Image (cartoon, rainbow, N blue to C red):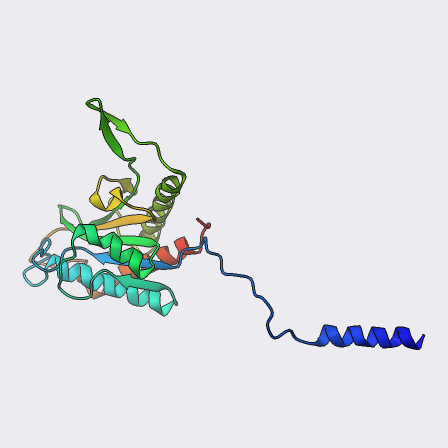
Length: 231
């Protein structure tokens, strides 16, 4: 009886002891970890002039900075393709995004139109090639299928969150042929801000109140996307 009691006491003692080198579960590697914000233009490429004071390259950079601050405040990693007035060749943008460790790509652009609204484009076109003088569609790899599907999910969340903050979307998210999407190997989306020039009022892309709403809505969409279904 005494032996049994001693064994029981020893087992209870072991159970109460902490294990200093316990192995913790690894992080979910299928979740997204960082977003790459790409303010278009820069250097000699001014982009569309918003008004007599603001060039497109300055506006996209200001928007990217505002979005980045919102994300960083929520402990979300965000990198900018540029943080000064420089031109980054199109072929280098994906290289730098991967080098930073980003796995979500968001390009910010402007376009002069007759309506103020935001158009969202996502990677959705299959690659094509010519064979025997005919254009044929290259079959999608499983990885590419995921990229296209996730790009669409990200774009739809952007449209939804912009609407929640009363920022007008030009319409549903659309696919578009773009050099950015040709080599996309993780979710990629373009936010194109359509602008009208007016001498009577300040454009929504430089109006502080609207920039606050745009950055908040965009950051919310990114966080919702990252918290969604694993890749």
